[in-house]
Length: 265
DNA sequence: ACATTGACCTGAGAGC
DNA sequence: TGCTCTCAGGTCAATG
Image (cartoon, rainbow, N blue to C red; front, side, top):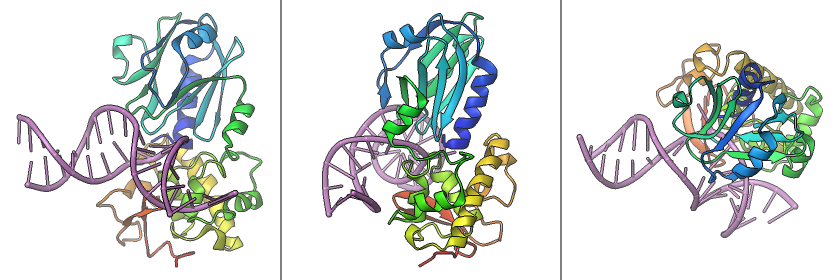
């Protein structure tokens, strides 16, 4: 699940629960995530310290610790955070648990082990090392640089939007929504799109991601003319037509062939 | 050098 | 009920 809007909602949840609280204990319950530090390293960096602020780049979450280190969490396909009073109320697939001195726990849960837990020295270096593109909601991102980043791809526009090295934060779900709002066919070749299409895609990206965050990524709260509430096998496009479900660039895409004709072959 | 494919991991849901 | 099969919103190594 977790794409940029999901991670931003996690970040706000973290800020409202876990900032400025002394950390009493660190428990790493699985070491076999996609990437992980050891429990010892985590304990050394976090125990007795507190989180002073958080950050996000694309789908990556960072928490700055008073000792100087940043805790980096990536949520893979199934990760989330949960803050609770009792450790027995913790989620089933908790991989990391922090106990604060106030008695509450913050759990990082990840059913499939495709997430990551790392310690990094600073966010900018990490982003550079990973080769991540600008965050999709970076206020410095403008329509021209957006178009330039993506039009260099020889792939489909859907794959280009999901390429974290070009623009960071967009995954399978929100690429579908952005393409739907901009009325662009997901299999359109990125290199062939016209400048007006790029402007509409840029605008749709900001609108879709901001809307998803303000809806707390709850599909029931999305505007009804969005694709997401209808994005399932039986779903129909708000225009009344049938949605197509098809693998495009290796991922399952949902789209309306009547509405999304721009760039179609 | 670039894009595409399959593997990674676990569990839910469909179909028999 | 229980078994097998397919699929899932992310990434990365291997392949073309």
